Structures are given as C-alpha cells and as structure tokens.
Image (cartoon, rainbow, N blue to C red; front, side):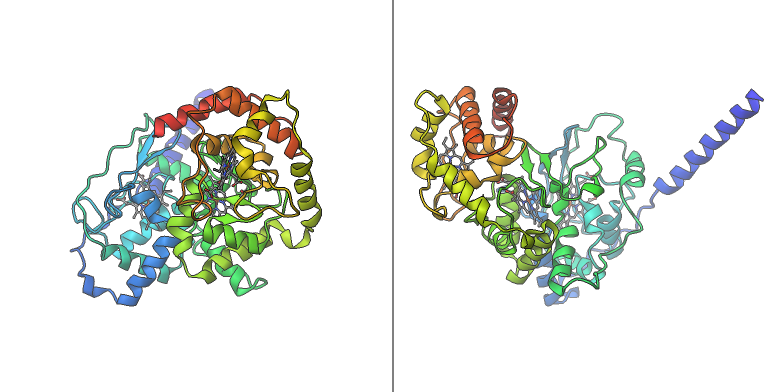
Length: 433
Ligand code: HEC
Ligand code: HEC
Ligand code: HEC
C-alpha cells in the first residue's frame, strides 16, 4: 500500500515536472538578417518614438550620459543587481537579428530570442497589454536606432534565482498570460480608455505603485495601493492616497505634465524621471487621458477639498512653534523662509508642507530622502530648487524636524524609529552617489 502510494507520488512528481518543463521550455526563434531602415515607414517610426517615451524605455535602457538604449543600467532587485540589455539593433550584442515575432514574444511573454526567460524587472506583464499595431511601431523604432556594441553585464543574482528556467514558475504564479492586449471598456469614455491603456500597459504605473508579495509578484487586488521601491515610497493612487487633498484631474495633469502641482508639491526620485524623460514629451491629450483615468480611480470628483485646504492652511498659520522644541527651531531657521505660507492658499513657489504627501504618508522615506538630497532645478518647479541638507543636518536633526512637522501639520500618528530611518536612508544615498 505504502509502496503503491509512493510510486503514485513519484509518478505525479515526474509528470508535473515534465508538464512544467513543457510549459517552461521556449524555443529559440530564428535569427534574421538585420532589416534595412528603409523597410519601415517614417510615420511608423515616429509613432514608435512616442510609444517608447510613454513606456519610459530610456529610463531603464539608457545609462545617464551613456549611449541611447545600449543598456547597462543596474537595477537593485533586493536580491542582487539586474542589468538592462542593449536594445539597439546591433546584430551581436543588441536585437539586430530579432524578427518582429521575437520582439513581440519578449514584450508579451518575457522570453528572449534565444528562448531564455527574462526577469520581471523588465515590466513585460504590463507591456503584454500593448496592441499589435503599437508593438509593430515600437519594433520599427528600435530597429532603426543607431546600433551600439555593448555586451549585457552579468546579473549578480544568487543561486537559484539565477536559473532562468525557474522564471517560468514565477510566470505561472503571477502573470496572467491569457489576458492579451488591453480591451476597452464600453461603459467608459474614450479618454478614460486611452488613459487606462497607457497606464496599465506601456506606462506600467503599477510596477512601482502596486505593492508586491514576498516573491515580488504585484498584488493585483491592491492595484495602485502604494509601495516602497528603491528607498522611495510610490504613494497609493487610489482613495487611500496619503495627501489631505484629493488628487483631481487638473492636479494630476499638472503633476504628470510638469512635475509640479500647486496643491500637491513636486515629483522627485524616479517619478521625476517618469515625468521629465517620458510624460512631459507626450501629446498633451495622452497625459490628460492618464489624469482622467486616475481621477476616476481615486474618486476625487466626489470629495469637497475646501475644508481640508482650510484646515491645512490654518495649521500652518497657527503654528508659532515652541522655542524649546528643537524641531520647531530647525524648521524656522532652515526651512520656513522657503516653505512658510500665511494665506488662504499656498504661493506657487512655496510648496506647502501641511499639504504634502511626504508628511502624511505612513512611511517617512520620501520626506527624509528629499531633505537629505534636495530636489534639483531640473525637477520640480522650473527655476527653483530645494537644497539638500545631508551635510548640514544630523540624523537626529532630521528626525526631530520630521516628528515636529508630522505632529503640527497632520492628524496622523507619530512615525516610529525615525533616527534609524534617517540613518539607513543616508547610507543608501551615499551608496548610490
Ligand atoms: C523598469 C525598467 C525597464 C523598462 C522601463 C523597460 N525595460 Fe526592457 N528590460 C529591462 C531589464 C532589466 C531587462 C533584462 C531582463 C533580464 O536580464 O532578464 C530588459 C530586457 C528587455 C528586452 C529583452 C532583450 C534581450 O536581449 O533579451 C527587450 C526587447 C526590452 N527590454 C525592450 C524594452 C522596451 C521596448 C521598453 C519600453 C517600452 C522597455 N524595455 C522598458 C528593464 C526595463
Ligand atoms: C519607476 C517607478 C515609478 C513609475 C513607473 C511611476 N511612478 Fe509615480 N511615483 C513614484 C515615486 C517614487 C513617487 C514619489 C515621488 C515624490 O514623492 O516626489 C511617485 C509619485 C507619484 C504621484 C504623486 C503622489 C503623491 O501623493 O505625492 C503620482 C500622482 C504618480 N506618481 C502617478 C504615476 C502615474 C500616473 C504613473 C504611470 C504613468 C506613475 N506614477 C509611474 C514612482 C513611479
Ligand atoms: C531655498 C529654499 C528652500 C529651503 C531652504 C527648503 N526648501 Fe524644501 N523645497 C523648496 C522647493 C522650491 C521645493 C519644491 C521642489 C523644487 O521645485 O525643486 C521644495 C520641496 C520640499 C519638499 C517636497 C514637497 C512635496 O510634497 O513635493 C519637502 C518635504 C521639503 N521641501 C522640506 C523641506 C525642509 C524640511 C526644509 C528645511 C530643512 C526645506 N525643505 C528647506 C525650497 C526650499
């Protein structure tokens, strides 16, 4: 009996193992002669350029100061560094010998031309929603870039994460491979559908803003619920967004188009790249459409912002600060001359901290990051910058400032372990500079 059971279990394991291999094994697709640039219509290439901006391909595939799309940027996965690949049409080190079918398979299924499974640091589960004509245009754009010779650097993932075949198991668990390209919803407007298509597919907003499970899969039942990524918090984009004021369509448009919104502050960190290297260069209607989609998702149209605005401005005005409080003193000497507002609405050049998500969020990382590192004049409000205080303020100082602003500008519970949080953020900044 026991023996028969054992044989049964072993047979089952062998069969499921074979089934997994059958699923996991992907053929190499035949290499082609690199196509001539003239093979692609000019308007298709131009369309592909727009789509590459909307998908932020350069943010990951171009090293700052390096050659366009030659890859080599290291992404810290938490388990090891994953390097981006060369997606120029160089036949040896890039994608020059890739057929359109090979490109489609990579973008939709995360499989390289040689059959190797690609890692989810490449957001193919989002790109799978791109339509056929848009993928064709992207292919035309990339096959007509200047070829650059640049080998992919080896990822530093430890065993067994470096076994690409096992990625198939990850896909089985977390990628809905039968979903196919984006399907418009009949009950929504054309702008909403355009916004949803761009956000869920090319723009892969969820790759940063959706929380992940322990194995790194996006928790799709908490889509856009907010997540910490690379020592930044990508805040929730739903009604659980930390900002005291709702993000209206107009606010979202300003922020996504220009990187700054008068009532919500500025885009810093990787969001600054998303705006300035991508969204700012798209047709205005596309950015408007993304704003329409998220304004509907967060329900801002049904919220009256006036009371929350009045409360925030009153908190700011009424705070005279107690001389004994080190945080209050620091705020007055180091911050107030740029940030203090004494009116019904904040002045456009004075971001109001009593309205900032950075002070209201459950995680202080963004506040700490901005205070340590500042915000350059290229990001945020044109012509203005926020100085970094890494050299002039200690971990203690920044922790005191944070708890003071949290206490006087919000109704949220105190942040725990602030000094440790500042110290660990400071370390990550030193490591990346
Ligand atoms: C968030 C970062 C990120 C973005 C954005 C991104 N990629 Fe990638 N991409 C990667 C990484 C990382 C890899 C390599 C994954 C691996 O080693 O398994 C990759 C691999 C690829 C590959 C496979 C190349 C090969 O040799 O196997 C293609 C094709 C590709 N990307 C195209 C694109 C296009 C087109 C866009 C824009 C629409 C884009 N990527 C946007 C990170 C990114
Ligand atoms: C590479 C990661 C990444 C991607 C992709 C990304 N975001 Fe962000 N986003 C962030 C981070 C990090 C922040 C916090 C920045 C800050 O506080 O200055 C942020 C902030 C925001 C905010 C401000 C929220 C608040 O309360 O302050 C909005 C709105 C936003 N993102 C929308 C989007 C949309 C829409 C997309 C897709 C088109 C997108 N993001 C794609 C990382 C990302
Ligand atoms: C010289 C003027 C100046 C000083 C001093 C200054 N800031 Fe700023 N700060 C700015 C500007 C301007 C921005 C908006 C970013 C931009 O446009 O570059 C900003 C942005 C911020 C943000 C992000 C707000 C958001 O939601 O987008 C925080 C948080 C912040 N400052 C905190 C502080 C703190 C704390 C201090 C004092 C230690 C301080 N700042 C000192 C000018 C200043």
